[in-house]
Each structure stands twice: as structure tokens, then as C-alpha cells.
Image 1 (cartoon, protein in one colour):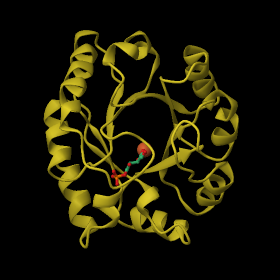
Image 2 (spheres, protein in one colour):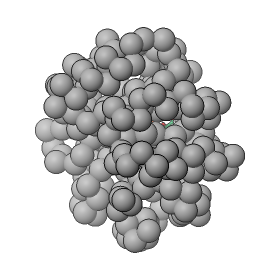
Image 3 (spheres, protein in one colour):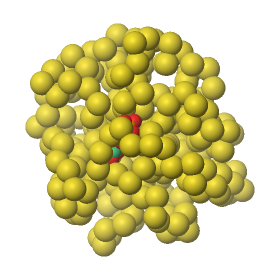
Length: 218
Ligand SMILES: O=C(CO)[C@H](O)[C@H](O)COP(=O)(O)O
Ligand SMILES: [Fe+2]
């Protein structure tokens, strides 16, 4: 099966003094998802925002909250982000913790779960979890900052994960994040991705509706 393409604008590239307005821009264009980047200053060399901000955004938005945890100890914060109103919580494979138990806990709290891998992490690292996830997120930049160039060398990894998905009859979404725009995103779509995080290319676009329409038509 092939999922319809979904755009998830990353609020990291929005106005951090007016995050609710940035979410409202997304919602007013009829886009359903928004991507929330959570950074701890340890797993990645940057800080963003936490569950209190997510809960505040939840009050004014009915968007699907796609929460990307870039944390050394994500298992400690699952309840907080679920309670704050996340719909999907993605955790990285790289740090050492009980990945299977944490993925199961995300679902037990009523959220969808996702597993994320950095550019330097081979696809094989997440292979054992493919039948336990709602989404696989392939990072197409080293996480920590928006506005970096797309890593074209990630395309074979996307294709490999899509192949496993088809061979095994699995239905998880395959998301890409980092440097995604109308050109690089389409390359990802061709490789098998169906869910497109766009920070800089979305919030920097003069015609955001057109970006949303184009990605929605893939
Ligand atoms: O996870 C992320 C960074 O770690 C962001 O989601 C990503 O960088 C989006 O920003 P851009 O589209 O500007 O690359
Ligand atoms: Fe992200």
C-alpha cells in the first residue's frame, strides 16, 4: 500500500515569540500535521521547548502533533508529552534505553509511536522494530538545527526501509526530516517516503498554500 503524502511543517522555523500564530498559519491552510522538535542540549547541541509549550499550543490547535524527541533519555518524558497533547511521539534509536518498552508505552498512552535514525545510523539498526511502529523517521540532516542542506546520500536508506515495508506487508508511515523542500521532498517521495517535515522551506515560503498543495499532490 502507498500512503497519501502528508506535509508536517516544523514549528522550529516559526516565530518563537508567537508559536501559536505559527500553528494557526498551518491550520488555516488546511494542513493537518505540525512537527514539534524537542531538543535537550545533550543528544543534540541545541535547546528548543518542552511539554509546557506543547500543552499551550494544544489549547488553540486541533492539528495532529508530530512530536520529535531529540533527547538522551526520551523514556523519562513520554508521559509528559502524551499528556501535553502529542498525537505521535518519535524517539531516536541511538541512545541506550529500552526502545521496545518505550515504543509500547507511547501506544499505551493513546499516541502513535515513531522510531528515528540519524544520518550516520544504518537502516539495520531499526529493522527489529519495524513491526512495532506507526512511523519511521529518516533524518536527512544531522539533527539539532533547521536550515541545513538535504543529505542526498540518505535516499538509498529511505528506499531500503520502504522495501522492507512492502516485503513485510507493514503500514508504518515513512517520514523525512531536514532540508526538505519541493525538489528534495519529491526525490524522497520517489524513494518511498510519504511524510514530509518542512521547516525553513515552509515558513520561508511566500506562498505557503502552494507548498502545501504541491506536497499534497505527490
Ligand atoms: O528535526 C529537525 C532538526 O533537528 C527539524 O525538524 C528539521 O531540521 C526541520 O528544519 P528544516 O526543514 O529547516 O531543515
Ligand atoms: Fe524534526
